Image (cartoon, rainbow, N blue to C red; front, side, top):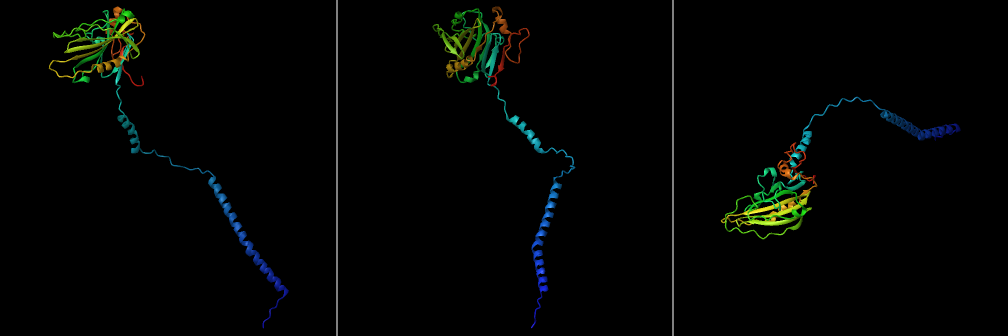
Amino acid sequence: MATINRTEGNEKQQFKQIESDSWSGIYLPAICAGVIMTVVLFMAVSCSKKSDTPVARITAPETPALQTPAPSTTAAVPEALKKAVKKHRPTTATYVNGVYGLSLTYPRKFSLQSADKLKNAPVEYGFAKPGAAEIASLDIPDGLFSGTDFSSALLNVSVKQDMTADECGQFAQLSNNAATDKPADTDTSAKPAADPAKPSTIKVGANEFSEIEQMTGSDERQSDTKYFHLFKNGACYEFALDVETSRQANEDLAQVDRNNVFKQLEKVLATARIKDVELPGTENADEATASQPISATQPSTETQPQQTEKAQVVTPEQK
């Protein structure tokens, strides 16, 4: 039977060996791990510092980009928009007479003529005294009332100086064939003129007029005229609204609605404005009126610098 010799020296030697093995097994891995972590952190910090250091970079010069179809498309868009946007022509125009301080706004489809374009007065004056000055005449197109007995319609403007306000409120009585400069009808069935009508006071637009209506003619040709008088600048301004109808005995035409025609003329009359001006002398009134231009493209002559009459288009902004 084998025996184990256990001596005191052997026990001490074995205890030290066990103690040594336990210390290295516990702390050595921890130390190694700490060292490794320290090295890793040091390397990470070093790398981050290097990355923070600005590095000069040499970049190649940029070459200009070639024009692509896209810019041409964007440039073409405004052109397309310009073509798509239509310029609407104003529907009204304004007649301005600087000599007599008068202005009228009227539809562009109407025809305006100044006194120098008229050979004869379109209608007989309604002043109680002779010697008036013609200013302008505005005609309604014939085609607006096709298929009816409508012949013509106009608004005529004239001025008579050397009159008082009371005299301006008076009207001449027209003869049976006076409203036109055409020969008298030979029809023996022509009706005599009606009893003289009395003037009335009426306000149209911003102005207050003395007004009278007179009818002349026969069954085949009639003229219905409304005269509006306004005293201003020491003179009498007359606005004559005339509607004429005509038909032959064998013509089958509808009767035009005269009230509707007068309404269109009265809309123009409502725009009449008369400024305070010093009118020319009576002896020069006709000469001053005849020399006035009518359109903006026909400026005033140098011999008449004080005349500023013109016809111009009124835009919404100007209104």
